[in-house]
Image (cartoon, rainbow, N blue to C red; front, side, top):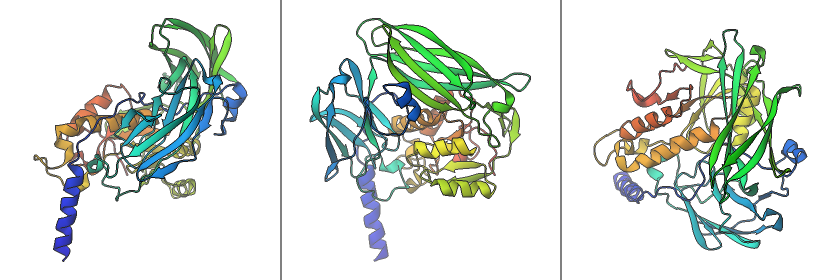
Length: 432
């Protein structure tokens, strides 16, 4: 009887994984979480509540595997961009606005944003999110057991036509051990003609003093994008570290034709990470990584307990990673190895045709997307000191190409795949 049930289960899984993979389309490029606010006071409060340019969608109707809810686009959002943010879903999903298909997402583990400005109208609208059950990408998600349809946090926000799209932070040490931080503000325009705006920035120390402040003019062509950069000197004793998890406050506001149109406030930390052989250097000093593998949804009290037990690094298991977990690690001085949501152990280790997806070129785009999503949505956190490409997923062309793709970002942090078994597609990083 057990043999018969095993055979049925095997054929069920084969049928599940035989579904055709559909690449993502219609979404914005991945970025770290950014919330636009109507005033400096609202940006500083950052309480997660609704305001003039931010609305949480919480009242959903579930019909089978389809979630739907009405929402309102107020008059105040006229001549601005309307962005829909989906924190996570239990599987691949399609987004429909007012009954019309808008986008498809093949990685429900990562947050995704959609510019729905053209699809909505002032007043009442509807959004529908159809979660694939079973998911076509189930072969990459061996940690899941037939999950029921689920959505994470979903919200709408309005940003101006010329808006802050992302923030990048890098830090380099000088010969005295002090840091030189570069903060890059990625600015994007959705205008159909060239547009000039002024971008104001202010970087505050924990004591509230200016580490850097100023403004720059930027002119973007039709639907153009560019990056503004400024530098700040960070004293050695103010660099982020497990012993002293110092964070600064970054304030950004955009000004167009004399009027302020957007405010953001972010917490950022500055630290330098590089590899020397198989040893990770944090702020120029060798760091012994005492690692504990944990679920990406680990509660804060368990994180605090692990730190008391002597662990200084958390290696996340595959799955959605909440901003709250990373923010807590930033503040508590716990280092994090971010994990791309790829785990194919149910497919076995064979690299032959029909074996593990890691060596099947048909899955290459899915591997690239998932590793890139994991990188871009966690990179800004000072606690994230390394990135893992996959877990228990054999090896092959897709993981080779994923490693090469991630290296093109020029990040000094290591990209690892512990199961690479000595192959070249994993940086040497000693974990204990």
